[in-house]
Amino acid sequence: MKRIAQTIRLRPEHREEYLRLHSAVWPGVEAALHRANIRNYSIFLHGDVLFAYMEYHGADFEADMASIEADPETQEWWNLTDPCQEPWPDRGGSRQWTELPEIWHLNPPGEDAA
Image 1 (cartoon, helix red, strand yellow):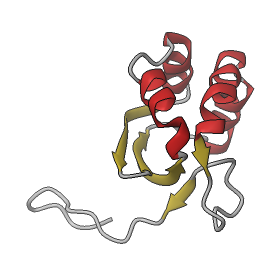
Image 2 (cartoon, one colour):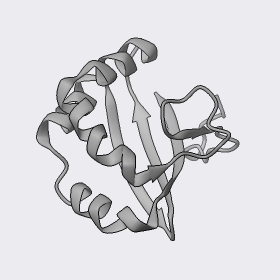
Image 3 (spheres, helix red, strand yellow):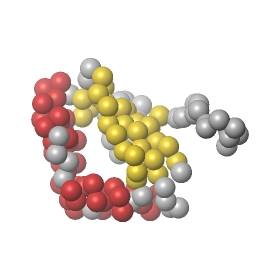
């Protein structure tokens, strides 16, 4: 399992629209995430900063991410959500969100760090 954390800024003038959209994420978008082996996905908001956490449970991360990007309903969803977001200038090669490196993880008692 791969843990993924990402961040992006929320454009203040689009805050209400973004929150409204995420109050009822389209079932097809959620289905595309499930098909791509994404689990335990949450988006958090602090001021105008969005923070996302998800877990990837598949075997081919790049192929699964490509399947999400190719999904027509997800593309339509992004046409609505992308204008609400302002990417960080240092996002690197990511499409929109900046991926954050994991620097520490609390393992269950008695389990060695991997």
